[in-house]
Length: 295
Image (spheres, helix red, strand yellow):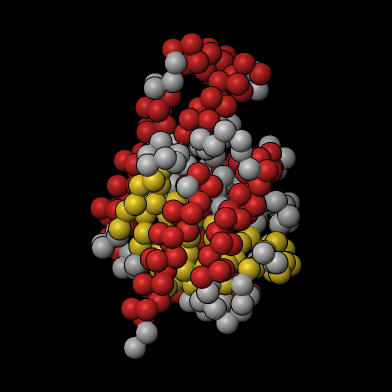
């Protein structure tokens, strides 16, 4: 599908965006994860343009084609919230549907707590409200890997040799089980993952890998504030998600009226792993929200 792309100035920095669909349509803004990935792996969200939605994707500060700031102290959840608002106002999007994937789900929740009046609905996909809970759940998932794989991980983690090829191979086994279970990974996903190593965002905010969270977000926990959110909310995730169903249930139980759907054949990326079913569920939810809002 043809996209319009460009840059929006936000807080003195240029952020790259792409839009799909007509400007007059209700708008979805998609938030990528990482932190430090790019919008590219979220391109299946553009499928929703066929359902009468404008879809806006963008690279967060320091990610992808967006500007990397000289001041790395700006690489925070709080600043990412300001970036979402900057994209919304800079492109004149009005009230939006917000869809956040992985860390983008945490970002979407943080935005909803600050500017609920700017949202039509909230959707998290493999999202989280608590980084400590997510870290504990990922540590539990590691215990389900073969003993030989765990031994390699433990040995290199103890030695601090996290760039060793044997350790990276063990991490890849974790990812193949709990990040994306497709036999061939989409090039858009591979590109987004490759970019994690090219910019300092992921290492600074998250850490060396998905289950070693040592960065600035490591203590973020918004669970106690979830009852403050009074928006139509859809909580999505995969049965084998690295951000486990336990994490999704915490969001569902915290936000009044939230609905949760678990994809039986997916891990962290159901919009790739079960693309048609994901499209159907999200389109139906968003249409129902917009229909209910019509006087």
